[in-house]
Image 1 (cartoon, rainbow, N blue to C red):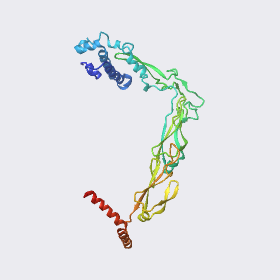
Image 2: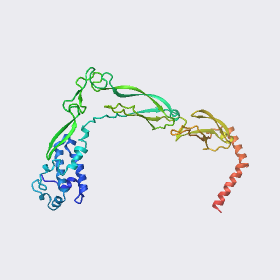
Image 3: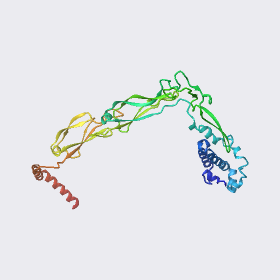
Image 4: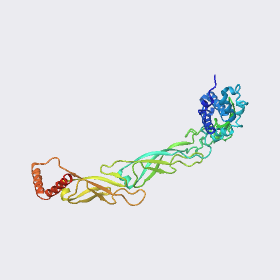
Length: 381
């Protein structure tokens, strides 16, 4: 089978810089390393070898110049540069800086290893519904969570009462083993989690019946929440160290509570202000009145002055939501909605007509005349 063009193998152009060639090779080496392709090791090894061969030529100025002039014919029978590819890939020669990425910097392929030191517990997330008033003034709630906790019977060891875990004979308690692998162009050594103890460094020969050797059991736990005044829909409450227990002496995770505030039938929230629409009759708007309205604190009276116009806005200071990051409260904003009757009796219609005639003869007529005079001046001049 004919060899592919080295530039094509690395996915770079013929004018690629040394840095671009090196970057491309790093990416391909990570992608096709046999340990990253356990189900297709042989195919990955061949692609790895192909990329390595292309890099060995294109990363060397003299070899690259010869390749640009003669192509593959410039290198005889698999020898690209007078040295055997496999020997040059002994992982201690010219490519050591790159392979450190995989065998050291790449963590010995840490996805296959387990952390051996203390590990922080996982976080727990839950949701909680609040009423509009609970969010405005704060509340205390008690919630139930299910989390893993140490088994009472074995004390968290996983071994049956009266027994103890034993040190793994394969890894001598380290939880790790070194694996030497041979591929087409060399040999290398990786560190992996011990397959006998699964990285724990110890083996439970007689598992605890209560937890089946896990050392932990699921338990329901009550947690008291203090919801601060002023929280809003979408706020998240964090309780430190109330999540899953840590492993090997690590700290517990946290509990995150997402808050959902139910909508109110009368109020809407805008920042720390509460907004409400209050309907009044056109008689109340015209003559004025004192009405009773609801607030978050209960009912209160509101004075409607004479000649109140539709859409008028009134503020009740300090009757809104408590400021979450400070003192005091927002306002209650009242928007006046003047209700026009949809059905009138004949007598009511007659009274309104009489009112209209009186207005026409008095203030209404003078205001109307002034309006039309302004319009005339604007368009006629």
